[in-house]
Length: 173
Ligand SMILES: Nc1ncnc2c1ncn2[C@@H]1O[C@H](COP(=O)(O)OP(=O)(O)O)[C@@H](O)[C@H]1O
Ligand SMILES: O=C(O)C1=C[C@@H](OP(=O)(O)O)[C@@H](O)[C@H](O)C1
Image 1 (cartoon, rainbow, N blue to C red):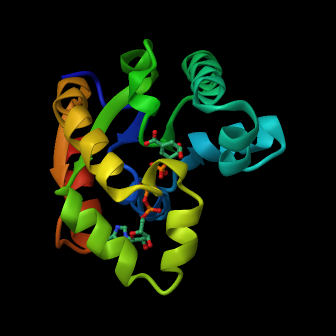
Image 2 (image 1 turned 135 degrees about the vertical axis):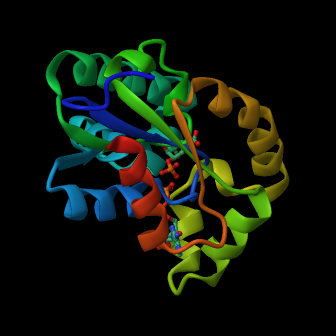
């Protein structure tokens, strides 16, 4: 296990599993700074992820992720970092910080997103969720890969944000 002190915490996992939500709760609890890789890319590009996919295609977006990963490794410390669902593929992920994989079943993720009051928006902003069958195949393709990259695996299905945060903090001490 890597030294958890003075390092970034990097949350990985499938789209909609709760990376952003858990990161925000962790930031409040630990008083660390936080950032989200999709937000960094949107600022860098001055356009939404959905627009980047539409105008430039997925491979361009993946290049933005690689650029962001290099910057994080070089310049960011003591920060809670939430990532886009495909960010875990960057080659320097393990050099950025301690990697926490938030795990849930595909159906658990979709059910939660559909129950949300802004469900339509939640799907519309994620281009790779527009076709549920394709998204399911992507989920199964990625599951073992997420596990391989993880320092810590946290089950988030049917658990409250509070419970999940408590378990993560236990691992960090
Ligand atoms: N543990 C949880 N309990 C209840 N709802 C959750 C939980 N984690 C995430 N959510 C909800 O699921 C949706 C997707 O979460 P989000 O943090 O945006 O996922 P990600 O950043 O992984 O794409 C949000 O509507 C959020 O409120
Ligand atoms: O899984 C993916 O490849 C992606 C996940 C998205 O982030 P969320 O995991 O926050 O939805 C976003 O980075 C982009 O749409 C691609």
